[in-house]
Length: 500
Image (cartoon, rainbow, N blue to C red; front, side, top):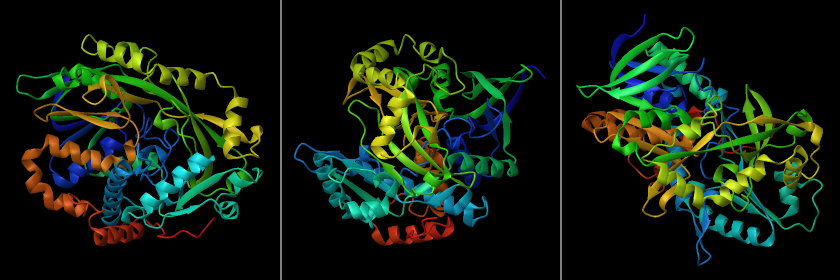
């Protein structure tokens, strides 16, 4: 029926991992609330959450060099790595709660143990990696990390990367066995399957075209049925905009002051996928290298073992690129239509500041298959062109906003929640570490949007995530206990010797 109006408690826009996480939490906290989900595609987890659209790294800051930086005095700052690792631990605890309470089954369908490694080349980088290792291995969060610059040891760890490499190359790596490979697409689909059993009304092929405030302070959404073209109107007291790259346009339509002076900068990516099972079998780790100068954090080169559809795959990339679309299924006009009178100066300032990034992205876009092979051969000297295919990764939209530290038009790398002053609406913007820290991000949303319930909800929040409100780094006993209990619940081995 056209223009029918329905009222509900909570509306989630977008069926990705963020909406799935928030919906699952709210159903545990207040089972009686009515929740509706609108997703313009035919299934859950089809865009940024999809396993082919992200790196699947349980981003725990174990291997990503861009989360640790060298300070002017030569020491290594690991504070960002500590923060991200703590946030990832919250996700692990929440997933364990879901498994232990039979809300989801078969954790091995979405998470597997996998060593996380950092690898660098050149004397200067080797020296940096050693300092980074010393700073991190002294911290309880990164216990068990090993460092080696010995070619024989490295041959044991990463045979595929070491074969055919000149013996005089300065090369070093760190390795930690408690890393994971996470299939966020599979996790998202599991969570939506669970939500369906809890009477959550999930509407696929429904696109939210407009959103406005009603007189009583609720939000009214104009929703279009993609197949029939019919229009429905839905109102809710609370709306979460978790539409990946599509969130910015919807945030702008709300008209909330918090959404002004914010822009988005889209970055696309391409992965190379190995099609030779013999090569795939020789590598068992996620190995992160160092980004080129001027490269955005999400284009740090890495060679990843992945488990997709219970099959072992090998991916290399991502090569960054530029497309004006905000979603893989978006429009070529996304970037242009996101420029509004209130953010045009912010966007222009960012454009002037980020010339080197723009130049880098254009160069990446122009690379031939042979040039991409050359980059892969930095990692795998013996790689053969015919054994690798290309897969287009998901679109990421980096937030551009005015900040005190960076001034006008600062490009933000990370995940950002924009909330109305009264907490009635929240929008999730940004990219990496994204999905890995979904639980931490949704705790943020809950605290900002439902402050009146926090006290009442706290016992349940602590049941779902035992370290809620505490620092694991400052409580090594609790950290040890959480490591053991999450490894057990999720079927992860504390120490992986199996190289299958």
